[in-house]
Length: 210
Ligand code: IMP
Ligand code: MG
Image (tube, rainbow, N blue to C red; front, side, top):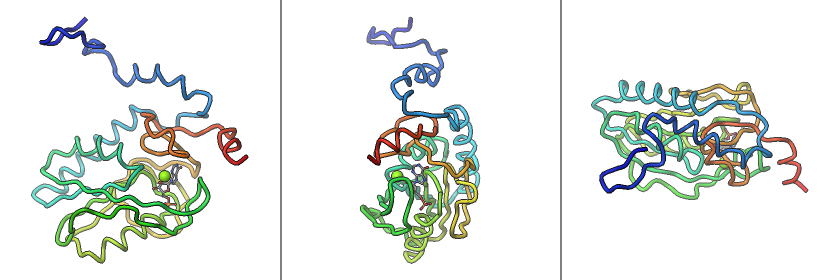
């Protein structure tokens, strides 16, 4: 058992795998989840790779990471700690109207950026690209503000679901066009804190509709 300088007992030994330990606590979600599509380990490995690429590409540039709330908050936190460069952060909050598990393409800005982006190297961080309509709207909006560059980092993209052409410079995973939760993504604001990405059992949607 480890003790720190104040004599407090640490909850685990340094060699314990925190992700594994966390998985043991996931039983509370078991009745809602169908299948784990991307494990926490796979995500962490990919996020580290993306961070390294970004570090190489943005050396000596004026990097501003812009997270799209709420879904991207988990990726922002992990990704940014794999980027070994001075940088700044900003966030936008958007909501798209439409059915609970589908976007309509009509995007409303709930919170705009705090800072001007003119002349800056903006990297937009998104959780997932489905139809691409949200991202397409955001890119169009941000381009009018004349950043020096504007690129996208998205953890996931759904195969064959895209309705508009998009250039996603940094993409983590391609997944089937199914609704997923976890690692920032929600269903009815729940499940964002799962360290992995999973599909939901059909009953979860059915219960929500009735
Ligand atoms: P798009 O406009 O169709 O590309 O949808 C993008 C937005 O819809 C994302 O930023 C997510 O907030 C949300 N979204 C799309 N697919 C999923 C999903 O499978 N689970 C949770 N949210 C999703
Ligand atoms: Mg959402």
